Length: 294
Image (cartoon, rainbow, N blue to C red; front, side, top):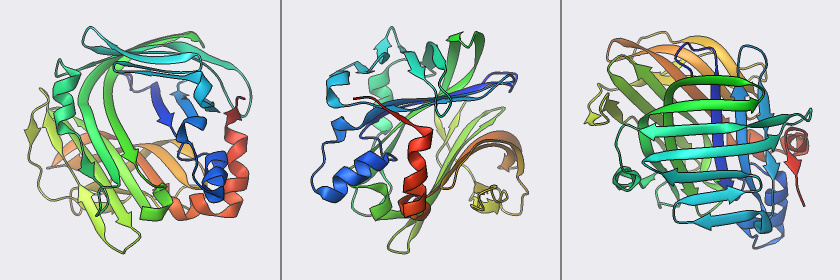
């Protein structure tokens, strides 16, 4: 997110695009190759226009190395203590070019050291894992299409799983709260077996772990599609919705203001309903927001 709060970008490399209807159909037929359903998702939010690119590509368009990953024309690579992402994608549903470079530099210098925090299980059996690799970072964004430059706070994590998300979870919310003295992450997961877990790691400005008092789910208001949004924040507090970045039948990405340990923070928030995602009507709509290369 830019320091002035006017622009933001999200980039997700997907090896096995978890929200792909084509991948879901392949799994329904039997064993499916996740590398036949890969994508570099790029979402840009700015004062002039928002843009969304998600093109699913087969394994022939994917190259993996210990410090780099290429999916089609877009590449992620660790070099010189920073993650460099160069992308050149086509937006959907209205085609336009979305191309540029993002350089992310973590507060801790070595990605290997950051990886020591990896492997938080979201389910009982460890089939779904979350790793906040660089909870505090800075990013420089330089876009050619559209022409735009900004810098600001950044974040890097990974998710990995051994089964479809909808088998293990009903829904979840995730957030990254940026305050004056560090950040707080929350993962509020509701599992299929009826249990619920709230993860809330916090980090000071230098990247060191710190303690937060207990948090509680607080309402943020329903989306236009009628999906509930909650933020794990101070008990009794009243978070405020500042902007909705993405509003879909099963997923929402938002910007909010909330308090953590009595201190105000700006929060990037995500809400996901796996029940809705798995429904036939949502599966029917999904291809309108993505492209598929052959």
